[in-house]
Image (tube, rainbow, N blue to C red; front, side):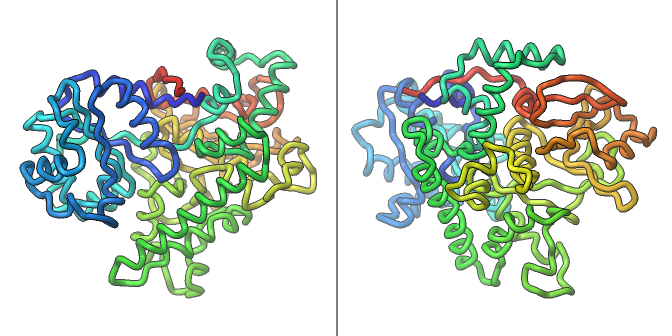
Length: 452
């Protein structure tokens, strides 16, 4: 069974009489359609699902549906026998961005209240930017990500009571007992290998076969690259999305981990602004996570961020570990000293923080160095620096020390995440096990549903 936290958000919406259409946004192959379908079929006797990408490539029934009457007519061609009333009919518009005119139509469909609607999509940031009439006030967009570590735990048989007990330990800044710590580190390392793509997780749970779940990851990674190339072909000027996407793993192996602009086309005069459309595609499609540089932090961080000195991470740590280590799991599971795991550990933390509602930033200062992540600290109107350590030298962090010594920054909390069991505070830094990142939340906790 797969546990997805977003299921309760979908069920809450479908139980309401909202005048906004819920739109689940996210990368392909992360389970958007599956979870909507599962909840929708459970709640509605008449369930209608239309994939607009498939329609665009096939009969194009909805291609000219630019009024509600046209939409109902097209809908009747594919599901006329299921079109009852609002209380028992759910219309799921999958990949709604394939037809941007449907986004304009949303406010009129919701106003007429003929059926209950829900939608999913990707590239919404790019699509809405090019939509002539944006349906302001008619869409409730919720971003969805691959399965996070907590969901991975449930998939692997860890009970909810155990997770809540660990949450309490985290809240009280206490370490787990030795046997539980070893179990959690083992599962966290397996999560680095498997990642959060639902099909990869399901394959791992059923077979424990590294070749099989790597095959799933490779397929999705290839699909993302094909999508990027396809998007380039549809635009008049030659974009370099595929090149930037393919560069992400090698960039993460560099010391700075930043996107090196001159390497995209081997042109030294190019600047970040020359590739804003490419970055927008990768970020809006959900296949890359952006981490913006902050040189002088203040609250909120967004006021001091920019596109320069950008870092990009893949949206799924399993894909990255597959690129780096292929079918060899020893590097991750055995802590080989000759292997630097820094990039995969940073990726998994980025994936967790993003899924839990945080915008991602890092500290970059020529004089003081870099700190892996900064997140907003609303309680203290300040920021929280986070360092991620994959090795035994987790207490060595000169950039973080310099960061904390600056009284102007008004830092009240700082964390170092590592594989170590002990939880303690020293010189303004709280040391915690890396798996405790699953309890960093920037949004209210949501109770999920189990999928049969």
